[in-house]
Length: 443
Image 1 (spheres, rainbow, N blue to C red):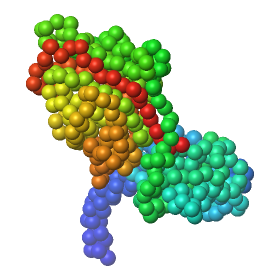
Image 2: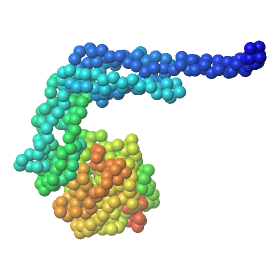
Image 3: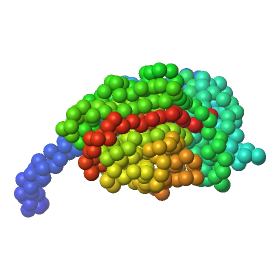
Image 4: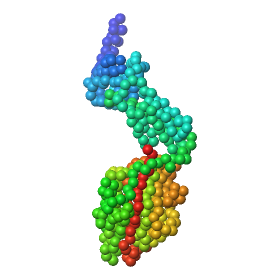
């Protein structure tokens, strides 16, 4: 017995060392638990369709991410914030609270709530018209009370019409959206519809929405603004644009005249006018027609064109440029139509030219048929096409043409293109005459 006792006594130093090692480890474990956090929340019914959620998470954490199961989500760092959530339709909803700790650790709590009654349900029908398959008859069949609603399709909005007609001129698959506003919340429902064939009568269905026939004895300032200056206009042009001194309205005709000031052939050696409808008359899609007679002579460069109204925000060429008609005097009896985008601009723009033997002697209609599908340029009639621009796969770079554009009428002198073969000072003065500018759109 004495021998055994002595042996155990000799083991005490080892046991004591082991206890010293274990004690700190146990302490670390208990401290980590105290510094952690839990995820939890509670809820109560305000009424049958409104529920209040309160965060009940404990400990130290950084952020709360809520998903209320009805499409609404919230993210906050305020631990005490509560949320009143509206559930318009009867049913079970899974609510999840994700809590993110200071070290990015995540914990979550999930609960299911049951809504027993329907207060509001969004729905609609979309059926093809029996006599015109390019028309889709829409009906708002939503249940319950709401403040307002709108239909959205293509680039169109129809407000607060229970029965509406959505027109789709081209074959393809489109999305119709019904958006309803109730007590400050917005609810949405969509349906995809398919149109089997193009509407062959689309062009003729467009109606006149704006025109300037240049009646009276002055340029209408409700429609046009004069841009002024002699800085070359990005093309090393030589004219100084005046504040209307070179634009005259008489007998229903606008005449923009380029005049020679001196023989130096430098910036400011000529005067002219440049008129724009920016901020006054801007359009997206439609049939644009301008009837005009063009000037002549080497060095002259008249243009009828459009620029994106958002040029001040995105710049050129991202805003898009539509050159309905350009004419350089050293290439007589030939009209040009060109498109400039981020995908192709300047000498790399998408364009074409077409002979027009009486461009300088007679008035001709320069037209643009602009749809969400393509840009078609024509002279005198839609069948006489100068150029067609229709990217197969449209994106922001090659198709900025789903936004408003404004008109520009000007006569430039010289420049990179207009002055490529010099300027003949003997031709001045030279004028572009414009009979009218007209825009036709869907009504």
